[in-house]
Length: 231
Image 1 (tube, rainbow, N blue to C red):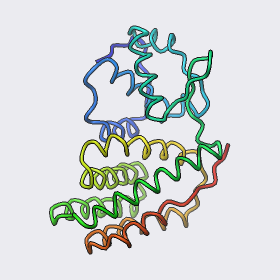
Image 2 (cartoon, rainbow, N blue to C red):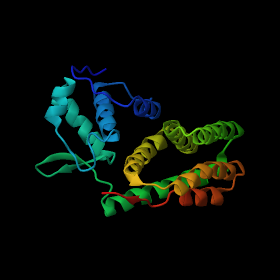
Image 3 (cartoon, rainbow, N blue to C red):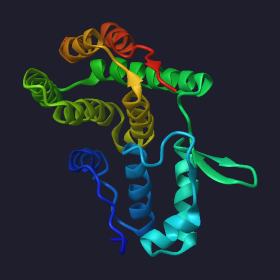
């Protein structure tokens, strides 16, 4: 574990959500630094367009700057940050219309393929596991627990990626899903859109269970509208 003299106060719900999605990490100093920076992005403490100061992060966490730089390169490769010529690094601003569209197209393309393939290969055990998640999503919606809804929504998509392509696909897909989540946190969503989203999980699952590849992929495409973002 990375030791820090200055502990950052973070929302426990956000941390629990990230811990669940990134449970395969926590193995090295670089992974801990990665987790720290990613948490700051999720909490809005390093918002889109914000510069990352490697020296400050190294001092704050009490680690070598080489470990921080290694993490910055990893975050760049995953699409979280961009390097500024002669100016360090900054969090990518997915509110930029061009970057926003790129992220949207990547998620649509990847998820359509995931659900199209999984509908052909899904097992009864996998279907049972996904249906249990859908029930938890619906329950969280009824009792209005947004963080639990968010956790279960992430669990649903991560499980489908795992079932469709294993650990390698999860590594690719996870970054796109989480970058989309960060962007959506800062976008306007009305109640009708949220209501449609809640119903979509059941419809998508039904298409998977029926092994209807075309319908599953089509429902996923309609489930992800292009949101209107506040810059």
